Image (cartoon, rainbow, N blue to C red; front, side, top):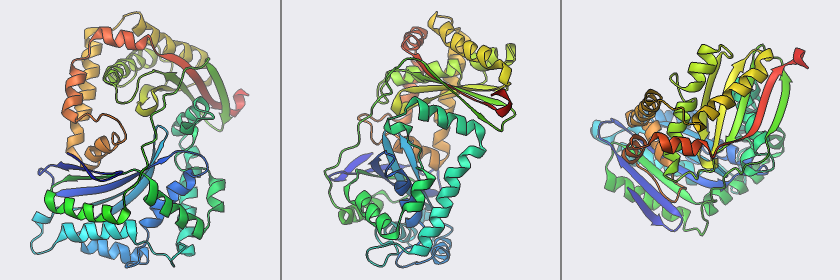
Length: 419
């Protein structure tokens, strides 16, 4: 259930009493750009490190432990051209704790984290800032250690060079070094004062009480005129190729495709099934043919970036198999365009996607993630609606959707000896 609790601030309530816990979260929707990415990433880290009442991480953790092991978490996520800044708290449901107002105490702490950070009035604590900056830089610099993830990141950067989505979610390490205590505090005020905001609460809780508390938090945040940054699809360009070298024993190949499908369109569900047939699982064409039958790679799969209309196919390969694997991945997509989709491929793809979607109901973080990822869309689909639309996808729709897909970027991370 969606409630507009004041201008620019919404509340999504998702009650489910099969859980013995609840999760409350807030998402600030800010524009994604290189100048503010690192600061956006740093703000939620600062907020979950200390408050006025609990001015260090040890005291904050003791209070969370007192609240029956409640947990704070935070992060930033790229959702198309939106940089979503989020903070969550997970706690036991109040009805399972006799005599204590757990929901009230947990949400009071949540409010303090958002609204009463540990500052001297115009700056965050410098010691806390330096610690969190070091942690953020470690995250940024650690991307290179996971070469598969690094290759995906680099493919997106090259595919979306000059566009907002080409910016990394945690920003650049060199930008982190420059951030001062007053600057990051001013940025915090800007985020909470101007961004569109969505609160999401899911699990087992007293709906009326939670709504009343969230409304109180929203009143302190205040109305705002800001709108969600619009979804901007990646437009097709001429096929480009980028090859880079690193100290790797296995090549990482990533192909970026444009789909021309808007994130809230019903056609997206066709695209999900198409991706399932193409490379979404062990019954897909990439796995069955490129990996198993042709033995061209160690892994092969594909996935979607919903908010940008992008499909990414990836494979781990021996360096000498680059051209063969690239061509065969493209050929598998062409095979779909030619109409070669069997009933088993269609049904296996649907079943895998529907099972995955249905499993979101089994874990609060997944359930909240599913709905919060759609907050900025003009149309939100429930899990049941998504399941129905996926079940109704026809082979002809998949073929038509495939014919709109174009290769945009071929990225290859190879070994230094290949140069």
